[in-house]
Amino acid sequence: MTSETEENTRSGRDEEAVSRFVERFASEMTEAGMQRMASRVFAALLADDDGSMTSAELAVALQISPAAVSGAVSYLTQVSMVGRERDPGSRRDRYRLIDEVWFSTFASRDRVLTRWENTLKEGVRILGEDTPAGARIAETVAFFEFLQAELVGMMGRWHEHRKTLDLPNRPV
Amino acid sequence: MTSETEENTRSGRDEEAVSRFVERFASEMTEAGMQRMASRVFAALLADDDGSMTSAELAVALQISPAAVSGAVSYLTQVSMVGRERDPGSRRDRYRLIDEVWFSTFASRDRVLTRWENTLKEGVRILGEDTPAGARIAETVAFFEFLQAELVGMMGRWHEHRKTLDLPNRPV
DNA sequence: CCTTAACTTCACAAATTTGTGAAACTAGCG
DNA sequence: CGCTAGTTTCACAAATTTGTGAAGTTAAGG
Image (cartoon, rainbow over the protein chains, first blue to last red):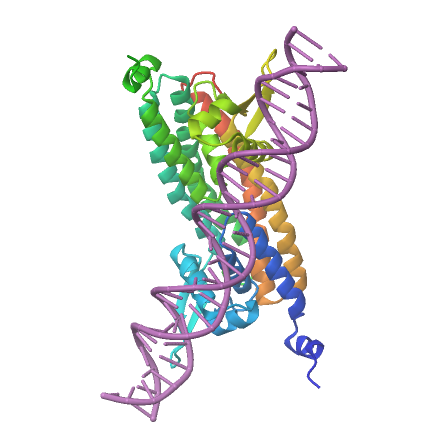
């Protein structure tokens, strides 16, 4: 007998509970603005022991078509949250969480901030920095510049802090 | 003759350029995940000299229905980016950017992080902190906790930094 | 109280987004 | 070279989201 329960026991994970976690976390990321399928794929990888799955594995785990996997993965690759590998001697791609995903995802917020800053500076120019609105937007620019500067220091401190944690060598 | 150009000259702003700025910044916020109408209303307020507009003013400026304004504003109120006021002796609501919008908007990211953290902790429990996946997620939790702690210090430093800027007293 | 300006809610139509199956494409492997 | 497993692209159908007009509600001012 190969009951689901037995499977779970053998694999050492309650796959049903894992799936619930994946879906729950994915939907929280979606609420925060990430595309749904991308969130689900990302969450699935996060919950995978070696942080890498093939297209087929993802399709089965998430009950989605290869096309959906392809779309999600191409987005995640775009924003540098996932990398694409090829198992030697295989035709299958593997998708793998990149090292320190969160770190680099947050770090890449930087580029967004820079884009906003440029737009906002243009706004200051249009409104005039001596006008109340212009001054307000100028302060926004200052705030974003401050944020970006802080981000750098913060990331350094994280790496320091990380060392004090007793973590396996597996990068996140 | 009351040409558009004359209007602009009189008001001292190139309203057309301002509108372009508003739309551009709004669409950048939308790309980052904020609802479209909410972004537009927010951007309009940002570019308004006293950071406050009535529903009617917003409807005209953005060419949208009162219903759309209502929806956008109720969202912005929800997330504490905009406050609602009533001009005494009037039936009109005014919507006003809350003080230090960016500051408090970033600060309120805190709540989102906390929600994510709870979900992730549940994930660690499900996967087991001794499993690779569990450990990865545990590190994610640690990263988020670190972030939250940093956020506090950062906001303090911003207020320090802000004093060194020669800004009008107008809060952002 | 009644009138009416202003805001909100609701049902719906339009537009957009999403995910799929199927066809097209790529590249290992014999 | 051709075969074929695997991925991507594409057109489309389904689902969702968005914004509107209109009805409903609220409350200021007479």
